[in-house]
Image (tube, rainbow, N blue to C red; front, side, top):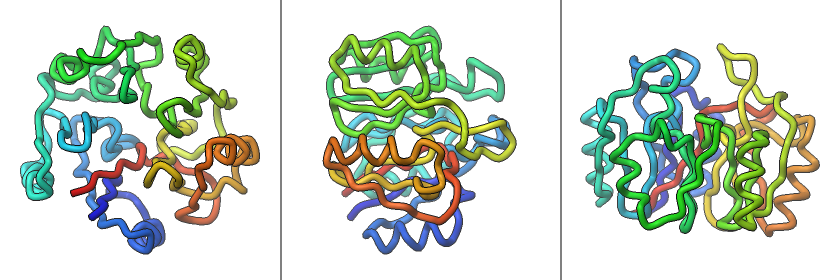
Length: 234
């Protein structure tokens, strides 16, 4: 079974469409330790280590932890608690490839780092690394952050560098490409919103076609940053 970990503000339409795609819904409990705009964003609250292990923030809701364990996932906790100010809010907001780990390493939670010592660690200035990065496959990403793009180019990652903006994030000026989508499997990527309403949507669709990934739109209208869509399976 495939489970989609999503923000609690995900709309009924988006949930319905995820269900039709074969996903069970897992609402990520919001944290009162973060500011409202991102308090339920999965990419702020947890990090998927691998198919068997998920790391959650230190104060994660116990019922959610039990649900993950019922899915036969090994649940581990961050060393430090989240806070609503930078950089204590970004301690889990990092990007993992099979062979690379990308974050502002000065602020990465130590327990998360301990699970990444078998990978090449890449330090970037952008602390909201996962928000800013949409993984297309192990060799390609989309981002609007130039420092992430520059670092990953050196690792032979194919990159679509997008201008910032034109993605909704209620409470903030705009959201990020990584926060409005997520891979359902290696050949399909779901978006909160519709790329046809995005100023750079045609560039994104062209890049996805290049990598044999089909975009799936969970709702009509502008893209909205809900903190990345994560999939786990049991």
